[in-house]
Length: 333
Image 1: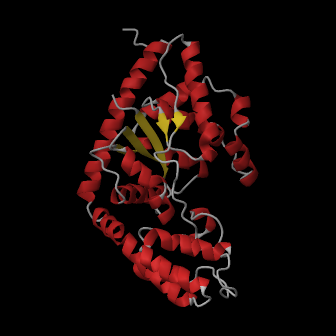
Image 2: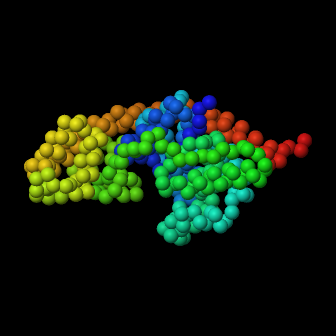
Image 3: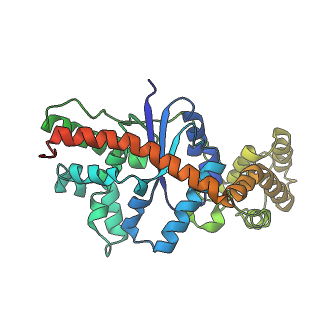
């Protein structure tokens, strides 16, 4: 029997190259070897109080882009979190066994409090409980998460084990962090600092849905410098970032050509960026075309969403039925 992988997808829309060549490439591989549940975490997003129009639009965008990027609804289960009300029911039960002190000690919660002191809501405090329920509802044992989510995953194990001890059962399994590959591709941003991500601003990201002219404009504005002054000198971070991007989207011959020019102090950044932009346009074209096609096919989207909800609820309903019996919640007559 295949092990179960569970992963939440933020309902913020717009996948960028960092997602595509990073975690998402792992998702596409995982779905052929594991029982995968990929959900759009719209309930989690309510802690930031999005407008109804924005929430609905971004959830749709996320579904479209993940399908276009390679998630196969026949191979895996892709669903919207709020379409599975059993998650909220399990969240209620697990909140009864989650304690204030441990929730307040969560690093992510303390960070959010510092960043948004005027929006310290109960949903933010119990965020780890909801995250745990997303995993426990399907008895997930493998969870693709970064270092920043390791504590939440540890809390998931705590809540599951506490339930088992409280009711003297061996029911919930322990879930652990999982990566298909030990070497995830790091995609740098265009701003010269760190990896590509929405938090660094729109201009730093190349989105899979960006039109070719948008990609060209962003790349031409990418941070660079006055050029090398010595033969074979070490590249500063902003320049190394651009070469790292070229390494991902261009041919080896193209990359070597510009490496040689840089090492001979003969590189012209205008030509370099133009080539990088065209290679990015070419690399993203297949996904961009699929995004457009899927976005225009409401019948297909409806089918995928309904199929995902049905598959996810089948798993979730089974868990809730068993959890109710364990707790002692039964119909009297």
